[in-house]
Length: 237
Ligand code: C5P
Image (spheres, protein in one colour):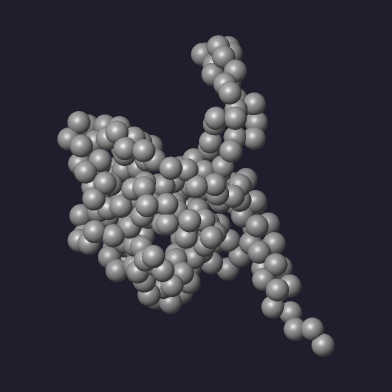
């Protein structure tokens, strides 16, 4: 089942403290943005990528796409002030009725197996989001004082990708925009619209590169994946 990716990449990355877009920071020899795009570039089911960028970073990103031979980006659109605005800008240039996958440019470690399952479930049910089970004990607190311990068995930590039948995402997004509702992910828009959203179990290493510590973790993950790849391709004599 084929799909199109809408990828918001127009953030400022203030929490990374780099002084510029964190997506340009390098892991190994490639910017984070390119690592993320590479995943979809290598997935035959991905039909195209719509990338939301800051207008003053457009030229630099175009040059990166050339340098690293990224061919599947079909449109570069101007992102907005909030992540939701950036995704809405992507939606304006999509004119099909297929499955779309919204994925943060800052999550380079997403696995193809999770993507495939998300697309399958979204096609069946309308909406599917990646998540992992909460590992720690979770509590509600007010001003630093515990009010309640939450049943961890029902809690999920949600990531991207989030996959949707496009018509459902479009209607949910239009309603949210009309009502001035700002969500922290696209799933919230669909939930408000009253439609069920299914969770697909993802992996804990699908981290969002947000702070300096994430970069260290990212370097380790990359090295481990490279070793796994080498092991599986080593010729035995
Ligand atoms: O800031 P945060 O890490 O939550 O951003 C998640 C993703 O959304 C990043 O890939 C970032 O570039 C993107 N984003 C965007 N437009 C914004 C804010 C964030 O495209 N206004």
